Length: 128
Image 1 (cartoon, rainbow, N blue to C red):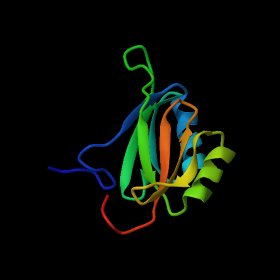
Image 2: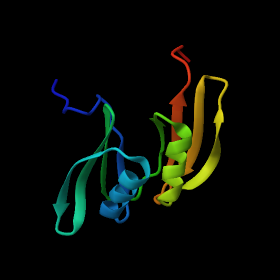
Image 3: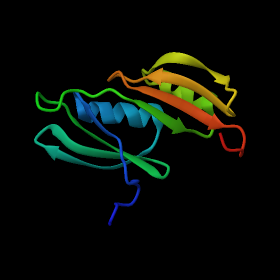
């Protein structure tokens, strides 16, 4: 089985209104690498963002594929800095950054499409 570089066997795929602008929003607020966009006219048919070793895909929502909402767990180098960057670029805090009992320093934000992103900095090399 061939799986493209930057993707796991399961990859998140988000449908969003104004998907091209949504993709720009995620890149500005959360970082990552724009791995390419396939446009159908002025509509994003498929966009790909890589966060470290994981990829997500984004496409324009439609009647057949309405906007999707999900929750993502994104490991970051520094949860406080990631939260500040996300907030600066229009994401709404849903949980302040704090140390968790399971060894992560984590906060939560909601993006412009209503998806929740847990920004998590692992504080220990111990398993959960």
